[in-house]
Image (tube, rainbow, N blue to C red; front, side, top):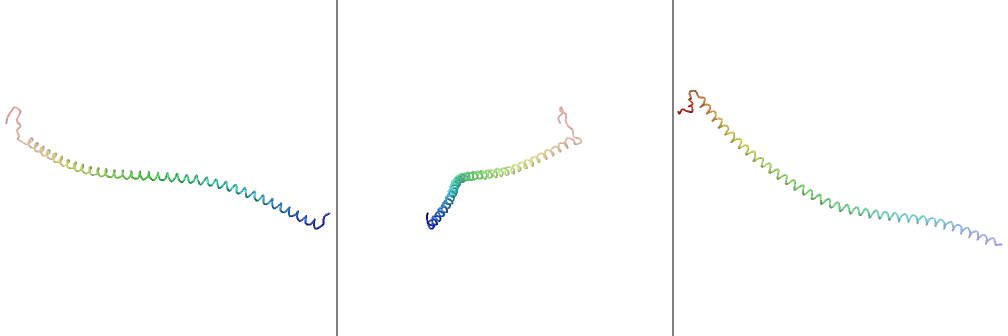
Length: 144
């Protein structure tokens, strides 16, 4: 048989082999877990990169839309200012025209009032002449 020293060293070697085998198994398991983590990290990184690209695309699209809307808004504001100016000018013109019409109506009213007063005076004179006592109105056949 073998000597006790040899047997002891064989047992130590076998124990070391078992310990190393366990450690190798543990390291392989750790490596497998780390590889899985790495795979998940790569997948997550790819997903995030795709999301980033999508968001950049959306941001570019929104920036373009924003520029178009800003230009459109500026055009609408310019048109609104022009319309407001036109409306102010038209209103000013209407006010001036109204003032002129009011002046003309007042002048015509005064002129009409003068004519009515003159006609009323003539009517009063005519009544006085016609209804004055002792006035003789010739017949159609008579001459005065």
